[in-house]
Amino acid sequence: MSTIFGAADIINITITISDVLSSSPDHIPKKVDIRPAHPNPFNNLVTISFEMPNSKNVNLSIFDMKGRNVRQMKLGVLSNGFHKVLWDGKNNFGSELPSGIYIAVLELGKKSSIQKVSLIK
Image (tube, rainbow, N blue to C red; front, side):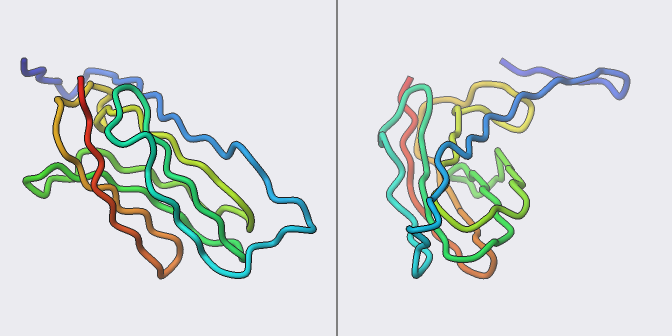
């Protein structure tokens, strides 16, 4: 099913980003640690967790197997500590993506992590 949007169409997009936990002052990570996406495969939501010792600019990009960027999340500068980012399996326009394998690229400052995630409907 294809949806064509005209120039005058207004699209409301809900991006689910969750900075669920904060580190206590007693636990400041010593290095960047990016955890495997879970659950993987996923149906509704996949979580990518990470911790970092310093504030950094964070972005999450999701690519399909043809290399197209289907979802871009610019999370901005996040503080040090533990963070979780949730992806709901939708594209930049809020439409559900089909089942398949996607590549999640998490950028934390100058460090990047690439993971395969499987979306199963």
